[in-house]
Image (cartoon, rainbow, N blue to C red; front, side, top):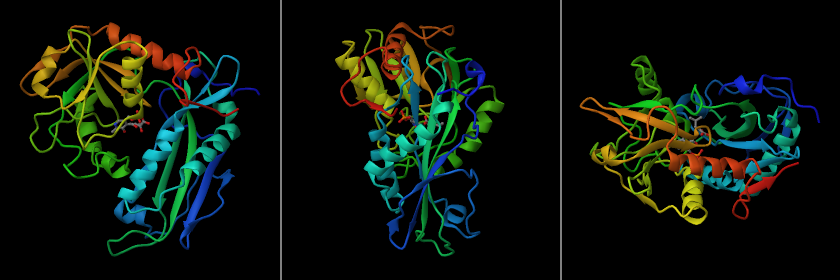
Length: 341
Ligand code: PLP
Ligand code: COI
């Protein structure tokens, strides 16, 4: 199969319309059979629940072309499960997890020409999402929903790829205690846009959000979890009920502990600890592992000794391993790779 003729190394992290998308609708208490369709536009009622009360959840995962030309996805079962849980929290009918996996297979196969070639540095981003299509005017869950899965080829999330980024501590909060920070709902991102634009206007690449209750613990950024490495080489990742349970982070912690012999700690991390860490990074499907060189708060600037020029050695080792597994160069734990075609 011939790949599309794109400048794969320079596509950036942008939406580019591809050939097919998978759509299934929930009506009269059930999901229909679902189908691949051509139309990239959605037509919904003017009073649809998504438009009035933001009833929506989504996911993000990637497909990779291996050296032999085959195409795989990385742990899509984890996305199916997380989306199931997100939907329940938003009072939406969860999409069956087995059907989610079948939809991944179908939509990736149908867009195989858009899955970037092996070694290009780009991947196919898969964005499953579900939104309320039925009309509501009083505040309540909708009766009708659409599940949709689209794909778009992407490059690195942060401009400059592996160059360490500078982050500011946000004056705004992302997630309330007992709120929705732990699920992947569009509303968490809508309310982060002002903080995002403010950070960029001030010359920063991203925000570090602190816990909303005490503003003393590190939570996450708008689209990735944090990783830190202590001076004695322990990998530390912040724990909180209002952080999205990143699949990349959970995979990394497993790889570090079981494949690389790196000690790991998943625990609350005080902001005041940051100055003692050797390396810092972000992790997520889009971010992969992106090194953080500096964190700037109103009071201080923390520079991580591993430097501003490149990723620190411990995170680099983990990066090489996880991207090696995703690209088929390294054998990963059983069940992590779904072979599509
Ligand atoms: N945290 C937030 C807020 C995110 O949006 C994402 C992206 O999905 C992540 C963390 C990373 O999660 P994952 O590794 O499952 O992509
Ligand atoms: C992902 O990593 O898949 C996300 O959804 C994060 C988003 C900021 C692009």
